[in-house]
Image 1 (tube, rainbow, N blue to C red):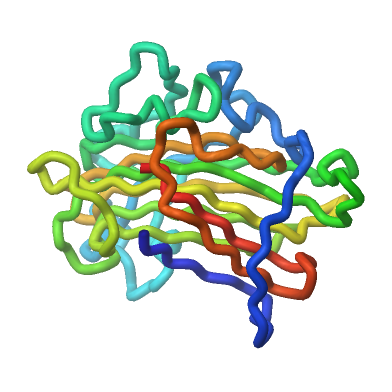
Image 2 (cartoon, rainbow, N blue to C red; image 1 turned 120 degrees about the vertical axis):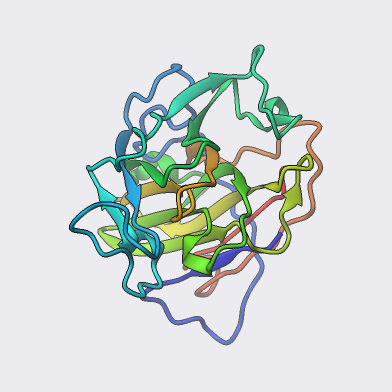
Length: 276
């Protein structure tokens, strides 16, 4: 699995130490981080459209070479094709994803959220939530807390220019500053084709550490159709919290890697598990 990552505001030390830090049973002040109440309670939803290379709405010129696709999103305004689909919470009982046959085994608990759809039309949807790290997020004498979340992505790969392909981004901000970013575009290697339709899927777990009591942490997932309007993407998010949740039973684990910035687990570690 290929992961594109951007680490902002931190120097990487010459020594990288692999580390697994075990968190306590806590949720870092996050509400409904696993969507187990069956709703989007606690989450903020923002929608708009991707300008793409040409610009779809009168008065907007399209992207102007921004390398960050988030800078090409017009928020709070739908394009003239159609209204962006609202995020939905899905329950594993009786649910079937048309492309990911074993999606039920990827759930943490009974529910997860689905963001956007495969229908195209330049839609962009983002969900986000801010939580406050507290002493209850640290157990066993730990002086820092960990943060976990699980994701599944499904995207069409139309082969457009890079910024016009479907994409999704996970951003984690700490105290208002970007702490971790994971970007995925549909043309990346390492994604698995599902069916004969040019649709690809991938999944993983993000593990961040080095969070301190009093830190304000914001998690955002943004999913975008292609910038030319004809191809779509959607993603699932589940299991947000400060407790480690193992890869669900029955899902192959391709192994994990740890990247530690700072000594003795004092910085940020990234732990990812292949879920499908």
